Length: 107
Image (cartoon, rainbow, N blue to C red; front, side, top):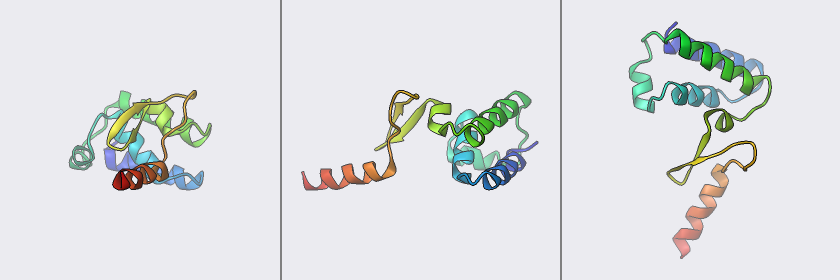
């Protein structure tokens, strides 16, 4: 299965569960340890079976068990930095990042 077909399958599952398709893409990029540009350059390449299984298992955790993608990958990005996250911490939100940007502008 290629990255493209795996992502199409994941997006279909995400829509069926009323979840964000972008999260499915982020999960695949992070688990395959690729940047966005590398990911799309490899879009037509086959996915290693081990990675495919790991991804589908993690996707089920996100879709069925409502575990945030950030908890599954172990980090979240905030203001250009990766922060470790788990179930004991709050996940940084985009709105908070915007607020910090506005505050820094006025300082």
